[in-house]
Length: 421
Image 1 (cartoon, rainbow, N blue to C red):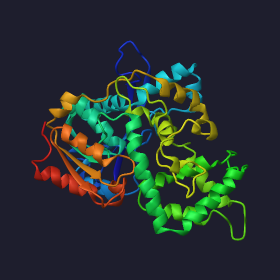
Image 2 (cartoon, rainbow, N blue to C red; image 1 turned 90 degrees about the vertical axis):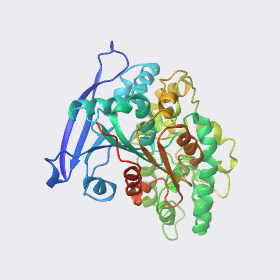
Image 3 (tube, rainbow, N blue to C red; image 1 turned 120 degrees about the vertical axis):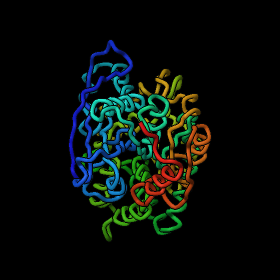
Image 4 (tube, one colour; image 1 turned 30 degrees about the vertical axis):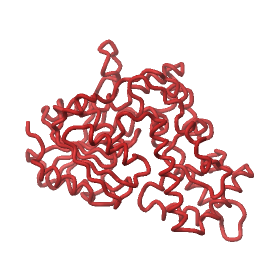
């Protein structure tokens, strides 16, 4: 791979010319070495998240290797992540009041990320149309891109990321809690011995005073959040081996190996914006997220920490996490302020999406634990020129674990290819 790094200065607030604050957006360009001087088509990768930095490639393999045979690939660190002026707890606290902190964080949503991408396209790549690949939250970004600046896109590939255009955060979790419960049943059917092991772990945590290596108290509800991996492959296996080493042979206390792994999986130190902005990504126009996952959890008693068999949770973010998790405590005041916020920028333009002529090929994972397939298909029917491929062969990470992208690129070619400048 031939790699070129760029740093681009952009406004913090794209939508207020009076605001002079700026941040830096980091761009990594990757191309096959033998083709680096060729005029290749461009593909911009829209990372999952929120709060996810662009991938750090280690070789021309997987989906990246597939695209490097024909394209120059652009990897963005979305604003606030990686090398793009990261949002740190200390910097946020320096802004002052919770309201000021929350206002700052509103500039790290899809509309601003799309504006960054458009600025990069115009300033670094001569305003040429480019193709986009949106994984998970990157699919949300794709729909915002098609709403705001379709003239920048020649074709779009979406993997597990057609968000429900009309669904607020509460509705999203009404769909995903039952799906997460189903994943729990599937895992414990595959590894029936883990039912008792998970209960043993939870009972020990409920007795109290179990500390993680960083000093945090490990509660049952924090342990339950390792269930994020239920929606990935091979997540069942990874969780099984995590539980397998929870106790050293003959010991009654949780092992250091287990505690260190749980700390790493649940600390959010590398990607705090994932937790801080998780529910905000569903807010468009007038909306109050109101800790939707926490409110909806009460409607699903199987996820109570005292329920047996113990149910692991998915990507749900809860207000107590900003008290119990050291890496999130600096963001607590801002997170509560965001949960109360009533007005948001509008992320999707229904009319522009209905009239869309940019070809879109989207993989909809029928059993997706994070993005409900039913909501995705409603969106596919409301957006012009979308071809949805529904499959249960993959989990949410099919882009990484399968040949999903080759299927989608072939679909675009078979339907006439990307648009031309």
